[in-house]
Amino acid sequence: MDTVVTLQAPGGVDQLRVSERAPQQPGAGEIRIRHDAIGMNFLDIYHRKGVYALPAYPAVLGVEGAGVVEEVGADVAAFAPGDRIAYAGTPVGAYAATRLLPAQRAIRLPDETPSRIAAASMLKGMTAYMLLTQTYRVEPGTVILVHAAAGGLGSILVRWARHLGATVIGTVGTPEKGDLARSYGADHLIVGRDADVVGEVKRLTSGRGVDVAYDGIGGHMLAKTIQCVRPFGVAATIGQAGGAIPPVFVDELRPGRSLAHPSIMAYIANAADYAAAAKSVVATMGSGIAATIAGEYALEDAAEAQQHLEDGRAAGSLILVP
Image (tube, rainbow, N blue to C red):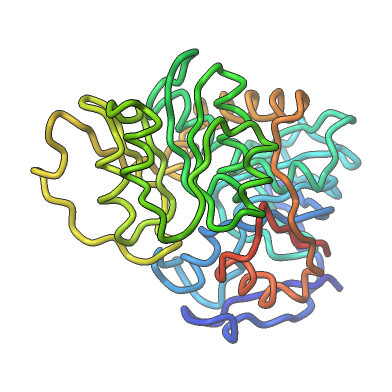
C-alpha cells in the first residue's frame, strides 16, 4: 500500500487527509511513477483554497515530481521500468507515493540530475523559461524587477536572467533573504515589506524604470509594480501570494506600459511548448540554474508543509518526500 494525500473539499489545510491505496495499474499510454520527491508550488495552495477549482473532490493535489518508472501501460515504448523521469503540469495528482502519468508528460532525467532538485525545479523552471523568453525576451542589457527574489521561482529567475546578461533588481522581505538573493546574482536589492519599491526602482534606473517586472505577490503590489516599468515595458502578474489583486484601470498603464498575465499551465498544455520548455529546464539544471531547496517534509506532513509555504516563511522551494 502507498501513501496518498487527498483534499476533501476546498478550504484550509485541515481538508487534507492522509490515507493508503494500492498502486494503480497504468492504462494505454500511461506509466506509473514511484516518486523520489514531489515539488510544492503556490498553485497547490490556490487549488486547495478553490481559487482555481479542481474538477471533482476528493482530489490529489500537486503538479510536479520526479522519480522512477515502475510500470508502463500498453503502447508505451519510450520508457521502461527503472527509467528516471520528472514532470510538471496537468493532470494534478503528485501528492502520492506512486501515481499514474500520461507517458507524453514524462521527461527523462540525466544521471547527474538529482531527483530532489528536478522535483523542486521543473514547474518553476518552465515558468522562468516562459517569462524570460515568451512574455518578454530578456537579453544582455535588459533591466528586470523580480519580487520575492529569494523565493522558489524568484531564485531561478534571478539566476537565469543574470545568465542571459540582464541586470536584476530584486525585492525581499528580510535582510537574510537579501543575502540569499545576492548570492543568486541579484545586482540590486530592495529590502523590507514596507519599502518604497517605486522610489527605489526609479533611483536605481535613473528615473527610467525597468524593462520588465515579475510580480507574484499580487494584492496592492501590482499597482506599484506597474509604476516601476518604463514606457512600453511589461509588467507580468504571475500570482497573488499576498492577496487578491484589485481591478487595474487602463489609465494606470500610461504611458504605453503593457500588463501581461501569463499562465504556465496554459502554456505547457501545448505539447510542443512543454517539450521545448522542459528541454531548456533540464539543460539549465545541468549548468546549476535550479531551485534552492529550503525544506523537506515527509509526504504525510503535507498539511504542515503547505502552511509553511502559505505563510511565506520559505526562502526557496519546499519538497515532499514519500
